[in-house]
Amino acid sequence: MDITTTNGWSIIADCSVVYDGRAYSILDRGRYLIIYKSDNSISIHGSDFISPRNYLSNAKLISSSNGVFVFVCKKEKIIITIYKIESIMSLGQLSDFKPKMQRTEQELVDKIFNNWNLYIKDSKVIEIHKEYQTELGPIDLFGVADKTSYIIEVKRRSITVNDVRQLMKYIEAIQNRDCVVIGYVAGPKISKNADKYLKTHQLNFIEVDF
Amino acid sequence: MDITTTNGWSIIADCSVVYDGRAYSILDRGRYLIIYKSDNSISIHGSDFISPRNYLSNAKLISSSNGVFVFVCKKEKIIITIYKIESIMSLGQLSDFKPKMQRTEQELVDKIFNNWNLYIKDSKVIEIHKEYQTELGPIDLFGVADKTSYIIEVKRRSITVNDVRQLMKYIEAIQNRDCVVIGYVAGPKISKNADKYLKTHQLNFIEVDF
DNA sequence: CGGTACGTTGTGGTC
DNA sequence: GACCACAGCGTACCG
Image 1: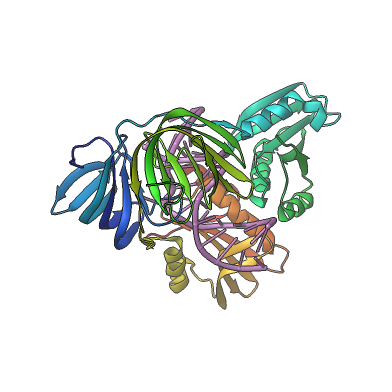
Image 2: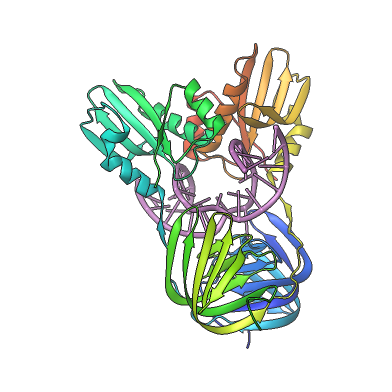
């Protein structure tokens, strides 16, 4: 099998890697698992971690001589110097199915959307928007009542201080309108620091879970 | 070779995957590349992408019967139903070297630290701190002068609106002190929106590159 | 194409 | 273990 022509492969090789692009890195010579998929993504794996040591999407092999393989994508480059290929496996055609996810942020958004009065008491909203566009980005849930607006930032995981700041950004984006703005972060739980930060800014937490 | 006992392996298999943990997902039956490293991390790869379809760190194989393999880590679980193993490869001992990175945020921080007066004119700082701790998190660079403080948030990539917000958070954290606070984001460039947002909040951009 | 936000973010560091 | 922030974040989506 020739890795310069085969459509998708995986090898174990004694090699070293240089990456040059958004950053620059050198991976010392060693024994790595290299995967080159049929979408031209390449990744170099070491003994541990889910994440590869080095990687490149849309990586076109532009040269290979004396064991030096050069892959490029736009302004990025990976140079693999292969001293020895120990084993080799053709990948053939792998499936392109993607996992069907549940417990996403979208589910929590829908849950609040469909049960608004359960989460926001006495709000008398006229309309509720999902992904309401502002100059500073989209608001997950935006409820409009007479002279009052409700902004909800939803997270599928525990709320952090940064999430509260994301909420504050959206509040800022619609603050110049002639209405009272009430801000909420919603999620399964909230970190201690975020909760403290929330309270100092008179914002609110909605507990919502799957 | 027996994948229930071997220390690290990679297979191509006709299989389906269920993940249950922080979220829940189903990956339809198909042909996938599965990697089980010697650190017990497992990842299931499809035809494309750097990122795996499913994955789990510290995944202990707790049962395998009738082709159903169950891996668990704390409250997370991956169940792989294998209908057929098409090829199999022992990984042996891969290297644990990590890429030595250059062009990191740290480099830019040091560059400003060592050439402070080049980037902040007429500041007359008495002391400069790196990773200065506040209640709301660590400030990349914190310069102290008489009655004036300088806060710099550094990024290795283009500055975004979020980065500006991160800066604002730190300003808030030290705002109650008896001094003027001047805020900066520093990076190779800044997005249009971030620049606009910066200006409306009277903050500043420092161009710093590798 | 840039800009923004989600993600089972992963991973490292600090408290 | 909780929490925080970086990362070549990757990836999707919307302008």
